[in-house]
Length: 478
Ligand code: BGP
Image 1 (cartoon, rainbow, N blue to C red):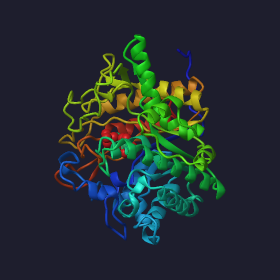
Image 2 (cartoon, rainbow, N blue to C red):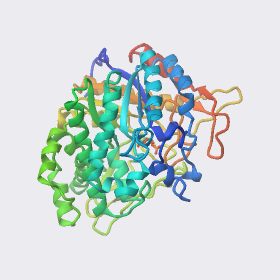
Image 3 (cartoon, rainbow, N blue to C red):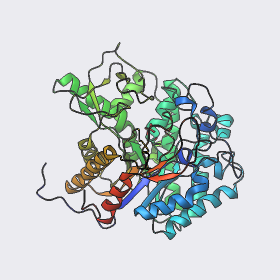
Image 4 (cartoon, rainbow, N blue to C red):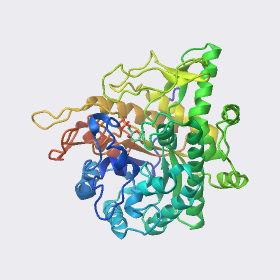
């Protein structure tokens, strides 16, 4: 659909950037913080690229005043960050650690003072290790009560200043990598356990939303979903069916539960047939229906292109975590779909398809299927950056990527989608969970690499000035 003129971004539209506690904070055992599962997982040899960890990360825990000053200089209207659960409750469900609350108080106050709207993610993958040890983390229903207690603590303490809350970041990613590919903690390969853990995460998500409303907190709350809209490789009906399967298994399976309180029927049938269905109690269905979010958060990086996959076809993916282009392998769910190369799209060095139109398509699909506003809670390009001798970073490739994606958001708005805001991933460079420090996303370059934390000096990239103009013009320069 071509528009003669695009709609302008709504007045209240938030121009943001996002991060996650483990990827920026460092200070992994400072001021009473308990260990999270990631603090331990990164120490298992071979789990992360070049053995990288977030012990220091980009030291945001100590350098946040400087980082917020840079955000203010850029002109961000929002900053999305996550709270490390084990800073607040070092054991997950025991005593509160006041020093943890104090850190986020300082950060939030700094943001509010500078006119930057805080968007707080309750959970970005760093479950306290103590809960993993006590009862297997997400595999136990006990997690629901503990998650709600933690969420309520944050709501009560911060909701005078925080109006946007993200319950859970990319449940589809932390559950699949945690229990299927074993690339994330707890590093399990067991699909039965995966679907049960996933069900508990659904319950925790809904219960946190219900708690938010029962406390009468002002503002909006919703999950952030990693959505890679699915295409068919061509018009062969078998491939189209595979693409529909991929959409059902990889998107509706999560978003339908969030937005409708129900599992999609074809996936549920497949789970039953394969003896993988989780235990669902009658009261679960009620809770899931009560916990419908105010918005759907969308983390968008790429689309997925699909083809027919026989029962003896390809399975679990081999991810490219080295940045050596062309090393990703075809993957899929046997008998359901497989992801294939899209000949129409360029790829990054980490083999992610670059597709701005896919963002527009994804936003429209969510709006029409769920009738919810959307917030783009992450979007960005992970690439190598070079600091020149005269201390410049000329990341035109990132500017191109972000410009066309932000434009796709404006097109979606022009198509009638309600979009609350756009958060790029990320503000400063930060730790990529599995890809080390060489896969960079920020507007601000941080002087560190896989081998050493170096000086941790911040340098503004060319994209910093590009986003500054976009925000200053409220999108008119896109
Ligand atoms: C999302 C996560 C982020 C971030 C981003 C980039 O899935 O929510 O935490 O890491 O992806 O991914 P990567 O670092 O793997 O390139």
